[in-house]
Image 1 (tube, rainbow, N blue to C red):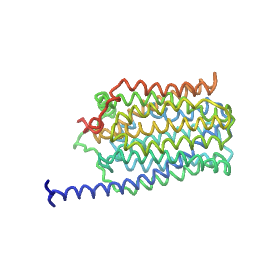
Image 2 (image 1 turned 135 degrees about the vertical axis):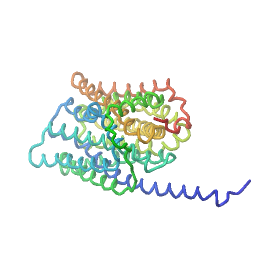
Image 3 (image 1 turned 90 degrees about the vertical axis):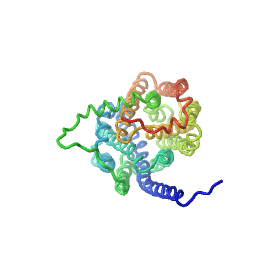
Image 4 (image 1 turned 60 degrees about the vertical axis):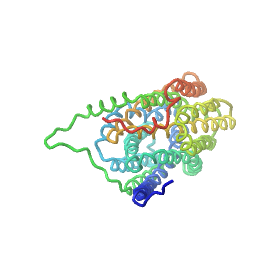
Length: 431
């Protein structure tokens, strides 16, 4: 066996140094996202409770708040992806975070001035969702600029794991804030957290270059950029299958989550503390999923993308049952299982998409996927709200949990069941 010479080991040492620097820069970004995600989780509890408890809104109106993000993608998601691919990503991250801070701050201000209304909640939810859409598209394209391909699973698992930790801790803190301050004022925490997100993005020193423009050339119509992105997605079979699975699952999952708070408050008889506990229990599954993702995805992407999520969705069947604290416990356990499966699936799918997509196509790919996924989520929220209003929230929960399981069972009849690590980490196709 030969011993490597200094000449051959030096590039490896340089590569290791580069990876360490990349991780340090990513950790700055991750720290800001950790704070921002924590604040957002507070709002995820406080916003529907403001509608249900303070404004006494019925289930179908609460569903509108859940559907807001999907409406944004349906309205102009494809255009947003094409715009993000034309812009530098870091300024988009900073601007969208600052503007979200302003919008969320309107809710506690309106409450203090006795101007709070459901219309304002919907407008803020839609505006924040639109800005979050731009932020998410830019972040998806920005992470591969910070990390190399071998670090993507690690980085995405850290981002998703932080979201799950925030889902555990956020509702607990939200419960205290809501009890002490009231639901509308608790959302001030979210407004401040967006400022931390903007600062973190500002502190990541990644050099970006805009797409070169030939002298005298006219600006290419943006619809052509959109069509390029759709053609790329159509030609990538694995990415197309992932789009179908994500959209189908989102429809059923959001049909259930859109009516979960009304069910727990009015049907199961839980108060704000009980609802917060359910969200916290659900987040524990996401934390476990983030811890498992790297090991599962590295050993077998097929397990992470299909087998493991399918097994977890069986636990989601506990969601609609019980009354009082029994209902809360069962809903929390169901949420923990589905959250664990969803985090493993989403993290692995995100890394696969980033790995197989050219850098200048990432925004458009993400927007196409998000348009289908969140468009389906918006329709699911409306369907769940309509079903809850005409029958009962419990029936919407039953259909949502069973439907989510059937989606992953059906995915077993696609190439996701046998996808290999080489396929998951394939080099980007040329555009």
